Amino acid sequence: MEAYNYYIQQLQSKEYTAEILNIVLESAYEGICVVDRQAIIREFNSAYSRFLGVRQEDVIGRKVTDVIENTRLHIVLETGVPERGFIQKINGQDMVVHRIPIWKNQQVIGAIGMLIFEGVSEVYHILQRVQNLYVKHLDTENRVEKSVACPLVKKDRVTFDQIIGNSECLQKVKRIGRRAAKVASTVLITGESGTGKELFAKAIHYNSVYANGPFISVNCSAIPEHLLESELFGYEDGAFTGAKKGGKPGKFEQANKGTIFLDEIGDMPLSMQAKILRVLQERNVERVGGTHSISLDIRVIAATNANLQELVKQGKFRADLFYRLNIIPIHLPPLRERKEDIPKLISYSLEQLSIKNGVTPKQFHQGTIKKMMEYDWPGNVRELLNTVEMLLVLCESEVITPHDLPEKFFESSNVQKIESHTHVLKEVPMKDMMEQHEYELIIQTLAECNGNKAKAARKLGIHRSTLYEKLKKYQLL
Image 1 (spheres, rainbow, N blue to C red):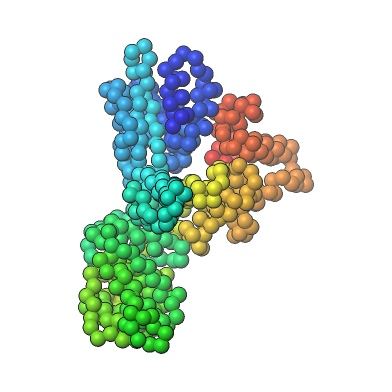
Image 2: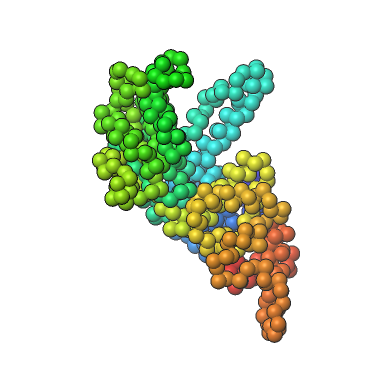
């Protein structure tokens, strides 16, 4: 925001240089777009280009309405009226934006737009941080328990906007999820491990009529079979040796007026499947050792990474339970089928993990992102998040380059490792050696400049457009 205000002040004054403005643009965390009087884009910083997934040189010189979805910068040019804190839908996401006219000699000579957050969901994360400070303050000043809640947010509340990605396959399942949230029908979420099934289940819950009720998650594979019945259905006082005095409500009771999430339902023992089916059919539960039924008003969401239809054929899963669960089927695509979402996932997770670990955010070199997009991610989004956290914590440089990646990123690729570029091969032509040296020099300079292309171009003694040409030549964009 400070960079944004400074940029406007400099544009409205006579004392500025293109070099200073470029530094401000590329230093800003926010996405910044500057248009002239004809609504032609004249400046477009790296943060904005990364968000839209476009290259700066491809959008500069184009009409802003052709580049930014639902923009109103051209309207601000006509009215001269600033628009602060407006919501703008871009790539299917609600964004918080500022649009400010640039005045000079009592005339509007252009306008500047800025994305404040990656999305409205980012406001939620900020409020979570406020809650943490709020609780910490109360704990310090008043010695109250840390369970005190800040009235600003509800912990763990998830929206579909927090499921990061703009790929068509992900947008499709999010549309199904939003429709499923409007009804009380049972949902079956399938997908490989690490695709975010529980996150998706929470998004359905918190966008439904059950949002103010509890969200109870049960990992069916983690509970020993002999304890499963009492855990799910609860027990009465004296139901068995060691039973808690007064009895205990089960997970289904705890989820009343809310949602129960049965994760890894494919691992549910056959002996329990019939009892689960009865609960789904009758919407009531009877505690172990009990004599009366307890009525339930709950939403049921189940999830599995197994092929339930195949398990039905093998006699390992009840067909009637499968059909009872499979009312609204939602299949989450693996990350390898939506690789276009990887840059945004990296950017988003980098910020969140930086906050979590209390470290300064680092930059990912374009070559690193390219290499990560070539990888198939068998562990899906969970593996990507773990990789980003590992690189964030262990990488000593401010820019994470391809050689910082683990060995697995090179094992299945026919592309030569980036480290091999540092070795001079026998009988290499002079032209190739010079290009190799130039390539290494550009990589090193970008790393020293924290990925700032304008600064790198100045350090190399070349124009920024020349640097872009070389980055394109060496496939570093």
